[in-house]
Length: 422
Image (cartoon, rainbow, N blue to C red; front, side, top):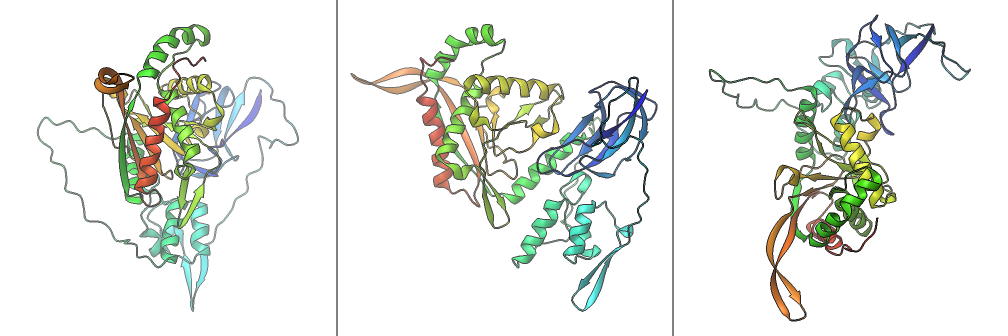
């Protein structure tokens, strides 16, 4: 019998803390290794945390609503077998220290601002409190800043955006917006409560439209060579790799090639600064059985060949639908692709995944009559065509760049070598 700590796992390179949304197990419950124990929220995603050991949940160290730093203990598990420890590991039964936090006090010009968070109307993380103290923000001002986190929580990004705009002398309306027109409910109507993921998606989509002025450029690409190539290779690929060969890795490969030609598509915006990303991390939207969407990320996608991309796409999509993705696999994207053709749509106007500046929707591949050039003149032929829809952030991506990028993606698709071997 041994006692081990369940710690808050790493959620991504830039995520240092997470808020506990709910515990899926209670003290005394038996848990299996890798079984989900609690749900947490970060500034990027809501996710479930699996147990690192099997045994009995003996004690919960961080209750619902608590903000916990990555690497800190959140529960104690009693295992059936002894667990080896080293000097570097934290003892499971470390003494608990009681910490009393005094109201934050900051000097604001000629008078003193006292930020007593006991009277706050919403939850603030320790990081947000510290920033408020350093920037001399009174509680009344802090309360008026709109929050984009879970249940309206004010995130670090919300606060830093507010401070950046205040520094630049731009006015931000912090008054409550006019109430929305209430929905009408009639006899026989069914009222469905949004689940947590749907709430999060709704918040992120509204935020993205508020942050980024969206523009969408469209190009129709000839996929005939790729369709014939896939038909020729898919059975061999399935037999050799034990996996399906879809069109998605081909689209992702073309997008990667175009990003290398136009690196200013692979950027992020931070206030009045543009961050040019070194890595090319491609997010791919996956529809879940619940109807929600999730966007796992292929990290360093430019380092994969077409076989590697195909296997990464299939693996992430499968585990996304089974709710088995790791938190780090949902963060760090620098560009996103979504396949609206899987729903039978020919094109779409996708919404950007913040803080990225571009996203491409791929429509359904359709047979169409088209004019083709031959040595004997123009002719009408049946070709396989697809619409590519590129939505981009018009703050930093002009029509010339946004339009040229999607045209280049189409060029790479149309130049695909039908004799290519994988």
